[in-house]
Image 1 (tube, chains in turn orange, yellow):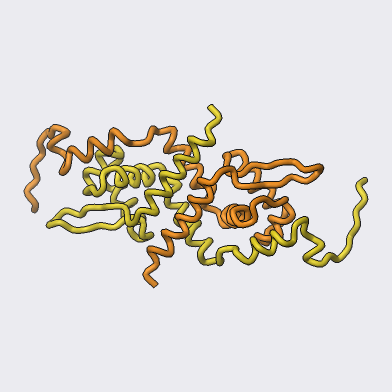
Image 2: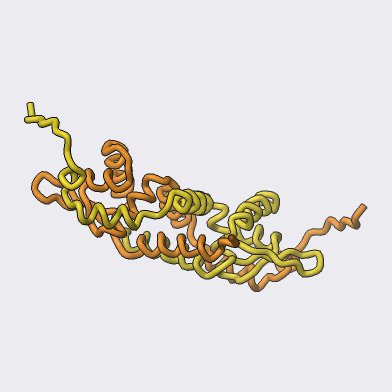
Length: 126
Length: 126
């Protein structure tokens, strides 16, 4: 049996490092921002959407048919994925006649993908 | 009725911009890397795990109890989340006596989180 003391602790006493806990608590992102980030990363956690994003990062801008050709998915799936990505502000579209072209919304998205890939390579023990 | 021509097209003819399609196809990440990225972003798409990562980014390193205090989640949930994050190489742990301290594995993770948050702020029309 371990010695168990049930005592009412002050916050300072609960924590091993109350100063760090306070700093981290003060700087915690607001609930809404955490929720938005969760949604953003959920969008990124799908192979087709990741392939689409990577294609746009590499090609600059592409029409739906060309994206489908690169990622090897049906145009309907690609259109659906693009709609979600556009609604989330991850890609933007522009019309050129009857064609719609898609591109990454801003450079942060490119960097997020690059860094995540970099992290994987960095962490790969093999 | 639109005029529908069913013809067998050469790859060059299928695509609006065959050169871009070729570039993007050549540079596409391998299937295994897309799969790993998908898993990584899946880990990030959970509010508790995001809060834990943000706490570690801000505090440097923390023990389980202190992390639980910052994120406001039970220690069992935090331990479970930390185990997943550690297995994926996102956080690392070190023992100090009987205490285990957790920290972000490398600076890429911090940057991914920062950039994603930056993207949201950038894209926020409000």
